[in-house]
Length: 107
Image 1 (cartoon, helix red, strand yellow):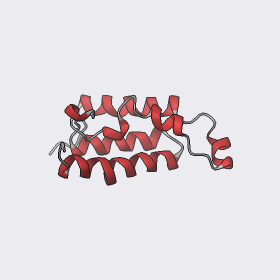
Image 2 (cartoon, one colour):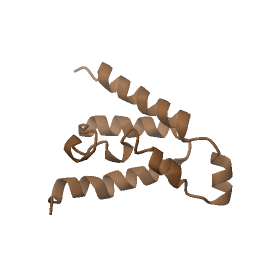
Image 3 (cartoon, one colour):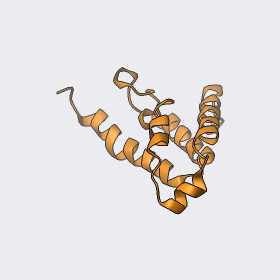
Image 4 (cartoon, one colour):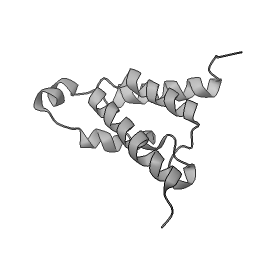
């Protein structure tokens, strides 16, 4: 059995790690000391649809498989040193968005 990542999965990880490293770490120490939640960075995470990795494209997400979603989230953890922000994105995705997508209705 081959457990190697596909080129698409490797590209996904590289994209998210690069995005997180370049956009989510500036001013981390100051935010941490001040106890400030970075709302602007939360909104910035919407650009690569991090809060919607596993949500169907028709509903504004990326439509990734469960494995690809986990690989993307792992990449976020590698690139984003603000683990509170990464945790918040995970909580939103896994505890809110996915259950609504699976069990909600358009009504």
